[in-house]
Length: 168
Image (cartoon, rainbow, N blue to C red; front, side, top):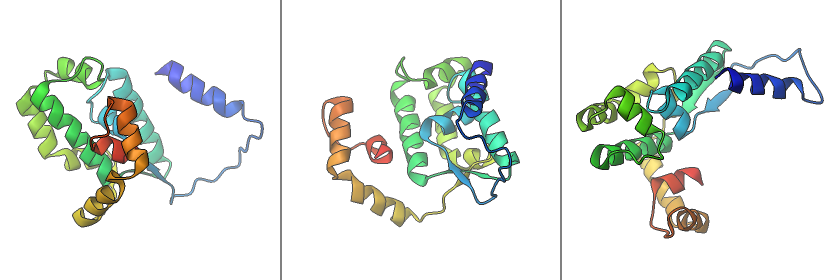
């Protein structure tokens, strides 16, 4: 964690034009991606969890807001459902949390059933979109060439995946 923050600060200080009189706008919204939300919910390694908690605290204490898109929440739910049914793949970061926290299928079901409230409790707002709007967005993107190409690249086939739709 210290190395990570050191690189962030170093990168910031090495910019060509450094503005020290920057005023933070409270209207800034930071949208968290799947891996960051899962880390924040302690569904990742300890190090990633600590990083996510610190980042969320910095954003929220600076007067800005942490947000997540409903499609991201849907993707997280899908990941948890697969882990619940089949266990975590060893390459997935969630496998560290499953082992460390002894996350059984029933515990994962509990996390899934309270996913939105856990996200909000962690200090992250969920973009308020109707279920119909989310469904329409998914339907709009699922047949796009970029989504199919991403699926082909990742899995060798272009079968629909919420992760591909989310990432595009």
